[in-house]
Image (cartoon, rainbow, N blue to C red; front, side):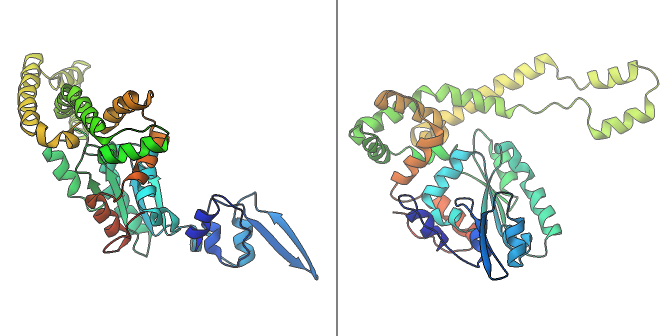
Length: 327
C-alpha cells in the first residue's frame, strides 16, 4: 500500500492518518503527530526525528527502523537502475539499499555478514552487488565464494544498458528520434575504440599489492632489530626487482592482449567499459555526455525486461522464485 501511495503522489497530494508504525519508515513524506489531552487535540510536525512519534505509539525504534534485508551496491546510479527494474525492492520498508562506495569494499561483505549474524537473533540477508571490472578469474572465484557477494557477469551495471532499441526509446523520450541501427553501429564503434583501454586496465589489475611490512614481518623485526640498519635491510629485500617486475608486466600484456582478442568479437558488450561507451554514444546522438545520476535510471526504465541474471539474483535476495515483470 505504501508503494502505491508513493507512485500516486507523483502528481497529487495525499494526507494519511494511521496508527501503523510502518509508514514512519518512509522518508518520502512529512510526518505529523496528533496528541489528545483533556478533551483537546493538537497536531505538530515531527521535525526532531521519529523518537517522540514512536514513543507516543508505544513502539521501540528497533521495531520499525531496522531493515530485514541489506543490499549493497557500488554507487547511486546502481541503486537507480535497480529501482527502475524492481520497484518493489525499494518500496518495501523491510529492504534497505546502501551505497557501498566502490567495488573494493565488496571484500568486506562476508565479514559484515558475520558481524550482523552475531549481533542479531533474526536472519538478515546481506548481498553486495559488485561490478566485474577487470578482475581476473581467480579474483572473481574468490569473491564468489562468499555467499554475501555477487559479481556481475558484465563489467558494470551500464553494460546491461547497451541495447540499441532501449537507447532509441530513451532518446525519443528526450525528443530525439533515431533508428536503432545507427545506434548499434555507434555502440560497436565506441567499444572498439576502448579495446586498448580494457587491455591496459586488465594488466594493471594483475599487479600485486606490495606490502613492505606485514604483521608477520613486524613481529620478526621486534625480536631481532638491534640497529637502524636492520629494518632498512628487511624492508629493502621486499622491494620488487625492477627487471623482474618489467618482465612480469610485459608477460601480462601479452597474455591479456591474446585473451581479450580471442573474446572481443563475441563478448565486447561484457568486456568494454559501459559507462564510457554510453558517454560516446550520447555525445554523438544527443550532443551531450552520459549523466549517471539521471540517464542510468531512465535507460533502465526503457528496457522491456530486466536482465535474467540480475532478476535471479534479486529474486533470491528477496526470497522469491520470480519477480513480477516491470512495465
